[in-house]
Image (cartoon, rainbow, N blue to C red):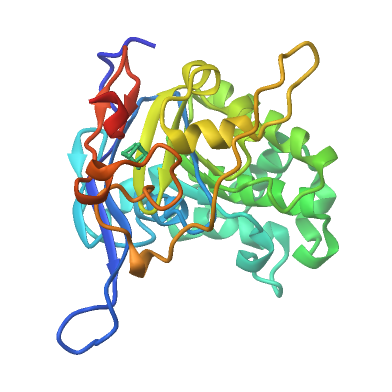
Length: 320
Ligand code: SF4
């Protein structure tokens, strides 16, 4: 994909802060701290990091489910307001880790899938909307009988197919997939991932794919951004990141991936300690409390993103 292609979704210095202020004596938590990402049409950008790194918050802000505390969001070149226009809301959809919690237990699957059509006045009458629902069930590998089922009657994999179907009902351009297979058995995961790939190719979809599982992200992504304590520490195309990770945190994550058949086993880098609480964010480099390369400068100065090769960005003083 040419690098000159205009991004479909652009996050510019996005910040999200909780707490703090005059009437709240708790320290402010910077859940997202200046994230900038430009996602190109038709690509899958993987977003990886430990639980608590802020990746889901970034996804929710990109999908306009959460308003940022600062920064801008552009979609197809237009700045989005905090709540989003109706058309951008249709074009941007979100798939949850376990759609069970977001599927109304008292509605049939048919009703759940028809609802976005009815709200947005898509399809001429109930008959046409039913046809669109049944067509979508086939598209995600289910059959017509599932239209009269309830969420609790379906398996985890079937429920995720419904979550994907619901996201597709309004024919979006951009979908945030938030840990879409983490709740599923390994045998079902690959079916869902392949379904997502097929749908992307067929509908020219753009994905922001959020996961803590580096194998899954490797399989799905064109480029990968690594998050740590609310910030992006490295961004690169998938092969560069997995073959030559530059940031000490990315190096540790990649070293933990088991070697495949015929691959040379990397030396495992074991991360020291836990991800710090975002309310007790270290000064200087956020990774300094766990980094084996930390030096005096890392304690006082937060590293800025710098380009090392084409499209490969890293935030670490080792590369200044
Ligand atoms: Fe480690 Fe310093 Fe680089 Fe941070 S800036 S990752 S502490 S070497």
